[in-house]
Amino acid sequence: MTDWSREPWSRGCPVALLGPGALTGLEGALRAPEGRLHWAGTETAVEWTGYLEGALESAERAAREIL
Image (cartoon, rainbow, N blue to C red; front, side, top):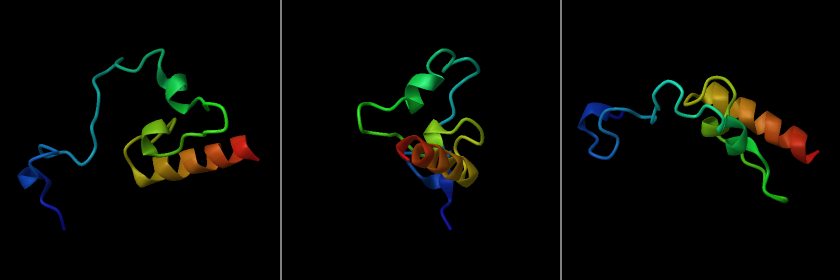
């Protein structure tokens, strides 16, 4: 088990969270495919960003885009 409060690079947080409105207008750009490259990962999730559920959601979205 990781003690995040003692982790020097995360400063106590396993996920970087931005303040309210920080990504307004950019959220679609984080998920937009670049040619044949499709992005997936919790950071590109529509909901549950920073959690496993968000990673699964984004994986399903990226798979739908490809197929």
